[in-house]
Length: 211
Image 1: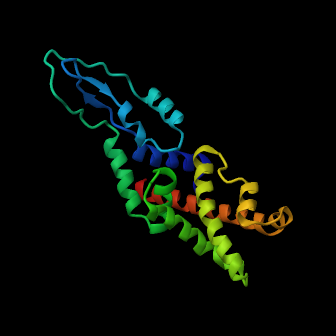
Image 2: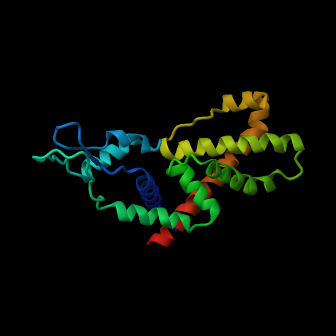
Image 3: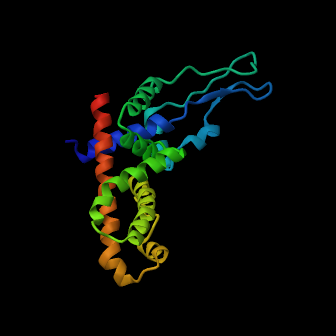
């Protein structure tokens, strides 16, 4: 079983594999071409751009380039980490669907609905048996709560922020504080427990196929 620091390293690897932009060499009119990656910052996920910048400063050296003849455009060879990043992306595609959906949704900042939906469906599949003989109204409310739990857990893993506070959830469910404390808070915590286990399973599965 992997330790906490090992899981953190794999999370960071997934983030970088999908988010690290390659500096591009651009030319402006007759000026010497320069290296720049500011136009590719939109590829950064919500998973801590400041952390990414700090890591890149430690691991890279600023390049200053010029030439005597201006060219309309040119390309920069692939960075040394490009092939390793591609290996990680390919490895994720070999995992089982639940693990693929979670890694892409949580750490690759996937905008594909199939990934967000896939995480929610995976959570519901594991959580539904815990409801026992609950009423249909309760089941419908829990289905909506599962989607919010997936969003919230993604934020927790990446930034430590809680995007759906209990007061907001209580308002959405239309329940009292006492009802939340007695019935819904344990369900909310159970969903996060399931997502935490799914996160560990996915990271360990990725580690096994890339070690």
